[in-house]
Length: 163
Image (cartoon, rainbow, N blue to C red; front, side, top):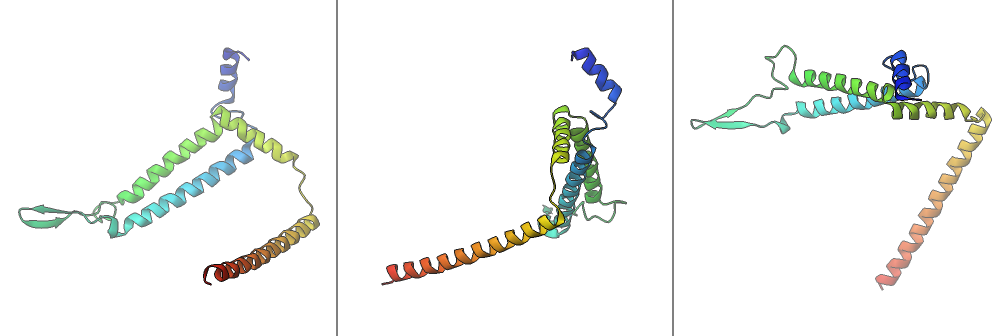
């Protein structure tokens, strides 16, 4: 496909690259990424609310003055930390939407991922239960085996080096 045809096809599709393909994976990726980003911003804001990171004092004319924390300052109609978190969240949302819906290589990867997931043969409920029980039993037996080996080697090393 030539450059002219590619550009024309992109203009016809609008803002979203290959509009009708890979939507579940794209929206799932945006939602998951936004959840993680908002959780990170929330954690950052909570850690900034504690005064331990903001102990700023200045000595002026022999007097020590404390600089107020702009994030906790009650004079503002909206706290600076909340506003900053909202601006960062909006910027991240736009960036993620652009990345997952507009960037050609990322969009192709998402579309291919959804296409491959449709080809997967999922197990039945009985197969799933049987496999889960087998996995739990195998992990338990492996844990017991490793515990026994650890105890035996610990005793051997105690006998060898404490004698």
